[in-house]
Image (cartoon, rainbow over the protein chains, first blue to last red):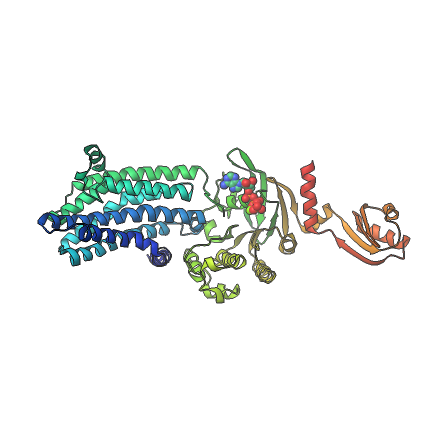
Length: 254
Length: 295
Ligand SMILES: Nc1ncnc2c1ncn2[C@@H]1O[C@H](COP(=O)(O)OP(=O)(O)OP(=O)(O)O)[C@@H](O)[C@H]1O
Ligand SMILES: [Mg+2]
């Protein structure tokens, strides 16, 4: 446990606290979007708008989680693997387990921070008042909902070059966010696209968040979709790792 | 003597390319192995197999286990060929991170002190010069007080003073009975610490033995002196393989140093400024590798 805490401190310092761009993309940008779409671009204050202020807060939280998992985790894992940090840890008695725990924990904590930041903004600017119970539901959904994305990010970290990874990240994050209705309501999209959007893991999470905020209920059935994705992505990740190990262990030599 | 590494008939290929061919190697406790070979000979590949970073069958044993086993990981320290230059990490943070992975690591302060890194401890790794970073990597390799140390081109980029400090530390480690495998292109320095030299060429060991054995096998003595005679007169001396003359300075190479010198002095008593040297490891090595290539 002490080792994990120390590892967390080591990673948080180098990856988050001394690397402001990570904070910018995972916290500031979703917060900026939230304010932009709820304060600047939209006017009027009928009950429908109030609902939108709430659900959009949820969407931006999920969006932040996607950014953290895909741009964050995938890039961090790739960098550390290319540089040889993971290799170095694997050569020690403790192995690389604590390292992975630490990276995932940091990413999840950042996503929880996004809940807090967006919650505060929603409260100050849009009078959104959520109960403690609702916050707990939100935290639970956000954590579980990010798991498929963390697995995807882990798989993507095995792309050969930095360039392909960066292209792939963009190709995943933006279409996924749009199609699953994180940026603007899914109902505004053509029905065939909605069909795709509605099976995306981010759609399930976003939908669950909406229900928790609007109706104060935890829709357990809504978790089935996410769990299916976790199983699917989990199996694929194991496969990818197995293939990588077969290919020869060393991915780089500086 | 306790056997630490045993390799029997090891072959290794990357895809279709054969890198190591039928390698046999036994290393006992306390030995210092100087592993030398040209770029691409397979030195790093061999070390990586011993570390368990590349796959091997059960013909490779380290501390009686397969490479990369927990026992081996506890007892090995390694300085890989590349440095781990992490972004936004300070020297002491990096060393602490590595130390944390072991239960028996040497106190950080002691390591910093020994390697003269105290004044650099708060610097970011990215700010360090190549030689300084190499020293940090060395610190990382020895901070678990390992019994077996792999050093892959440890002194690359170090200046004369840093190199001196480094070899002194290696000497201390040797006195403590540590076992080491060192690869280097600076043959002059490696020959001083190594108890056994191994020459690896194109994936094969073309020599294993002490420096003395290597020199005996390629026994060549270089005799330099001043003389007014034509250079061809010296060709009749025994053992001569090469003569060069530059104004009055003559340089002869011989495979039988003692007798050549005796004859030289008795036949040409007027030669002066005599200097006798054994051929350096560097030259022997160059000669060996080119000889083999011609075959
Ligand atoms: N990951 C890899 N994939 C394919 N070939 C590789 C890989 N790594 C090394 N090689 C090849 O294996 C051969 C041996 O490389 P190795 O790094 O072991 O040489 P070395 O003796 O350490 O050389 P140097 O003195 O330059 O460090 C080289 O021809 C190299 O090109
Ligand atoms: Mg090498």
